[in-house]
Image (cartoon, rainbow, N blue to C red; front, side, top):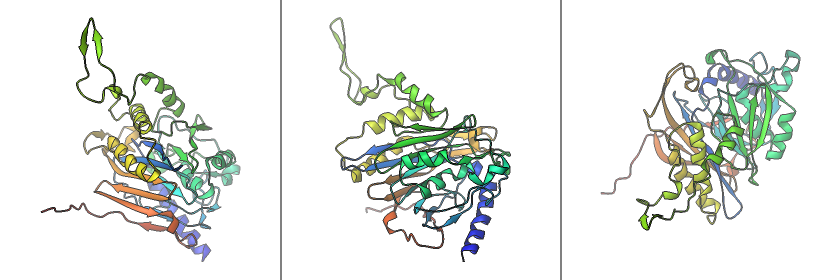
Amino acid sequence: MKQKIIKKIVAASVSAVLAFAPLVSNACTSFLLKGSDGGYVYGRTMEFGLPLKSQLTVIPRNMPLPGVGVDGKPGTGLNWTTKHAAAGMNGLGMPILLDGMNEKGLVGGLLNAPNTAVYQVVSPADSSNSIASVQILIYALTNFATVDEVKVGFQKIKVNRSTIPAYNNQSAPVRMTLHDAKGKSIVIEYLKGELVITDNPTGVMTNDPAFREQLNNIGNYANLSNVEKNPIIINGATYVPPSSGSGLHGLPGDYLSPSRFIRALFLSKSAPTTYPTSQQVNTAWHILGSFDIPPGAISLPASNAYGGGAGGIETTEWTAVADNKNLIYSLKMFENTKIYTFDLKKIDVNSKDIKYIKLDKPLSTISVN
């Protein structure tokens, strides 16, 4: 039975390696909110120029998973057996997580970084201790319970430069954000062939440039505040702001990664600290609305690195909110404004198969007359 499962996963992983990489997240934005009762809420958007056809993917404990080696083949890399059950969103029905949370409350996602991501040089002799870049999130969530465990674990493995034919024979260029049940946050990047793990005091992450540069940019917006500004008085004349909102006047509103980083930072840090975790879930949905990309606002030519080599109109395909205190993972799809919720406490952790759940319900409305 176990051999049959491995063969199925290997076959699916081959397809994933060939087809999945150009579909990794584009103009994605993520952040973390703290609840007054000690819980945390993670939110993120998923954008791309082509349909991902993502499904909610549920991975049990004790599931054998094949690592993709330097030759791009599943099974020639670091194979492992899942320690923790996890649930999240994949792409094209493949056993690769773009976003998700495990049963210990470790939550996070992959975000695209085509201008900075360069992976380690791994020799064929060391291939068995390496995985492909698209596997780093599923590896983290199924192996570790805390951010500190991730830090130690990723120092022991390599992420190879295995290439994907469907992505112009390049590696999938991603970085990873992770948050644990105690609110610790890190960003994992591979820059100039080296592993870089950075503690994240902001809880926010977007795309390029390198994360340290995003942090250094915060000081340029030291004037921003969620507190309203007083009127300006010049030679006895008073000039009042035209409306409320003066404290965040100058908050960048475009879709560039540095702008989204600053916007997510100030909106998430302005969230009321008196709200319990359950109420911060609602706050997260409202903040995520500030990053929703309407169809046509971003049109990507095939030559654009963020277009996955295919071009197209970029939209917010789905948004995710994870309550890691109550282990509830929630999703909203592009086609439907309903919120789907999945309770990780109800996972069949001893299942023998990976479970896929389609969230493809059509848009529905409620008639009030």
